[in-house]
Length: 345
Image (cartoon, rainbow, N blue to C red; front, side, top):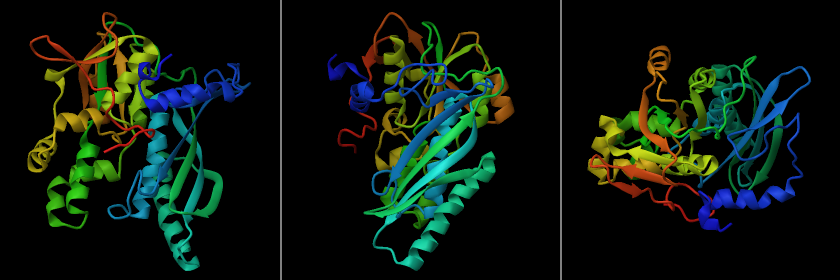
């Protein structure tokens, strides 16, 4: 299969490595790589999910506009979002840390304490411990978290596959907010007064809130067929869902809205809110497909988080398209959004 048929270069690379994983589907490991988390079952009928993610200084964060405490909190939340996308609760984490070799001994101790204060804040908020890890020195900060989560009894992990033609596509929160907040930070820095006008956007980037309770709620609803978290942008996540389910996705322009702060910042920076929404990433919202009978009201009422229908799933097309009010359709650009294997803006 040609690379261009995959939803991203990163996806293509992972597929090429599959023959080297020594993985075979089994009762213990019914799911390996290729979803938000792997699945592990036990003889006692307990189902665990296992996920890992890495944050690298000057790639995923900059200490010019984030404190180490904020970095620690976000590193945990990135993994908690994967947990939410499977409909699981966090159970325990391993933290593997590389710290800059140019720090002094005393400086290293102080910096590590700040980082772990961020870990602690996330662990206490969502009630799980750090149970081990590793420390090493290197060229820059690298924070790698491995997280285990557990499923509620009689609840199965919800996967990226399972979409049905005719499903509606829903998303939590306001995707694009994190990219907008990052744009503001790059423009003015965190200490400039002008940034206060966009503090909600900045907070979304610096301190994302994983949708764990919503993930649990959604996973128990039989009308929800597939789910993924929004880490690399709506466009890329939709391409992944489309490819994995062999179905098309139609994003309806008339359904997509932006917050007043995002609109104001877009006008001030002359940036496109729609580009932030589609290609920004790092929102850590939940994107899922559900039957036309799905009622979002109970989730909105119980959790106080916005839930927006942004499109539909179709068996009549392949790929991801924007459907405009006049029923014309335009393909969503395939080579935008975050991808580690090519240069990103």
